[in-house]
Image 1 (tube, rainbow, N blue to C red):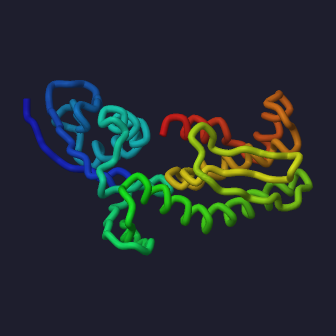
Image 2 (image 1 turned 90 degrees about the vertical axis):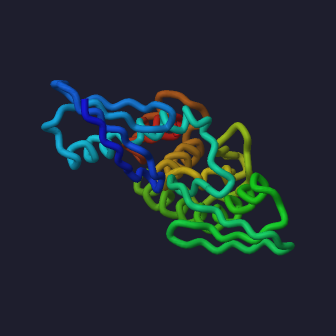
Image 3 (image 1 turned 120 degrees about the vertical axis):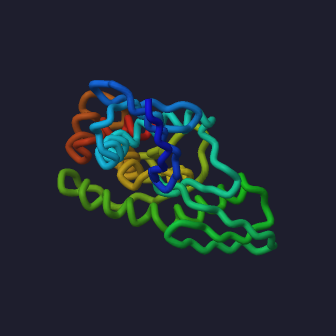
Length: 223
């Protein structure tokens, strides 16, 4: 058996890849202790292995996150589906600067509280825009004026529709998910203005405005 040690980057995470070349007919991938183990034969190229890993990256990352307790290091933050470096500096005034791969933050709070504040501030910028985009698509099928948007951290819900008050409340921690997943949550709440329960009609309307909602719901639950 010949063993090769490589590295692959998935959603900005550098992950060790251990390739064991045996007399296998097929190629098999598994995750052990946060590392990707590939059992294959001598004829499979490095590019083929990388392509196979990237094709299965969501499943691989799910397993890695589960194995590692789904906890990030204190110098990392998950934002819009990717992992960014978090550079914290102590200071009384909250200041947030975002680059393509890092957040530079001045804060007087600990890691957990600082992340809450980052998500709240980013959500106030991002979520109204996504709501507007979703409402434009929604109004191709239904008539709905823009509801009032409330943003706050919630422990048990991604979003809530208060249809009697014409309000939608979205969880500020949605900022850790992909944009398409966030839009799914928004569509879900918008449909509640039409159907106030989770009946067959509700899901029929949800599929009309968000055809791949089942896939996105699964992606949200498996994050």
